[in-house]
Length: 197
Image 1 (cartoon, rainbow, N blue to C red):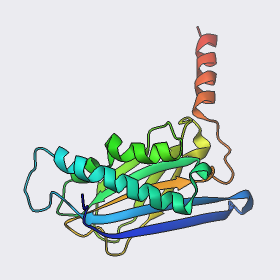
Image 2 (cartoon, helix red, strand yellow):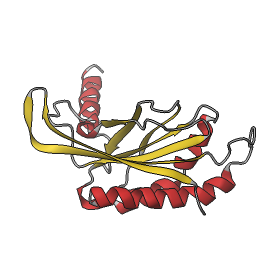
Image 3 (tube, one colour):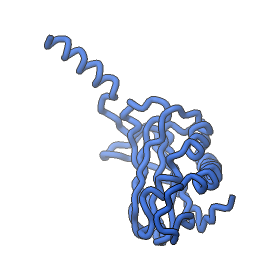
Image 4 (spheres, rainbow, N blue to C red):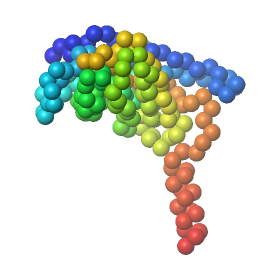
């Protein structure tokens, strides 16, 4: 079950002032990332990725979740997401494989009492590239106040034959949310449609 993790990295960002105005409550975002040997590296095109997914995804999901909730308690999490980045010798599918399975995501979702899907990015990049990890509210996906993005980078990762996977969480919305949520837009557009009939 050893995922051959080379390192774990944790990033914490707290925002106190946005737009020149102090936030009522500081907003904290946490990202926990694992850098591991790409399990499909050097094998050419691998048709069946499932054996490695079943072997590694639950172990990685459990470890990353444990590390994240140690920094941000589960009951404080309001928004969440995930990201995967494969090194330049790998396929984007290799990054996707390790995070796009319920065996990975459900561990995080259940730990923080979430019901929404985990928003995501999956890309190929060189070491030190800036990685964006998007988030949505953990249960109300139309709540635009919680459309957040954590940016992070690891100077030496992912290596050419590595995969970097991460989960992220926030304990609140953007500091000064002022745009309508998706449900309000839908109600207004439906009212306008009916008026134009």
